Image 1 (tube, rainbow, N blue to C red):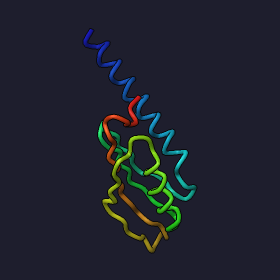
Image 2 (cartoon, rainbow, N blue to C red):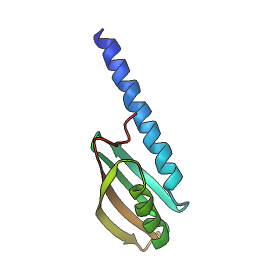
Image 3 (cartoon, rainbow, N blue to C red):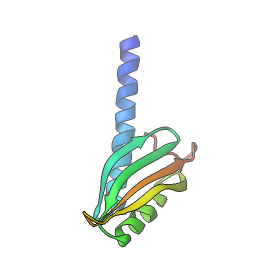
Length: 102
């Protein structure tokens, strides 16, 4: 029974993550790449790069359109002159009533 609960929780979390990743893919500009995506019940945290200011602005707008997102905080932004990329960390807070849970 304990094993069954653990498996059920694992499957539920993976389905939720798959749903979030699918939604992120739909709103992500072509020149944006994610290096890390962390999902909790109350937030989505992404670390990535954008090849342009338009790409960075596009991902901010896109994350804002995800179901349940109520606040977006840009943790850091810097420009890598050597690679010509914008490095970013973004945290989106999810409202518990409309979250991206499965």
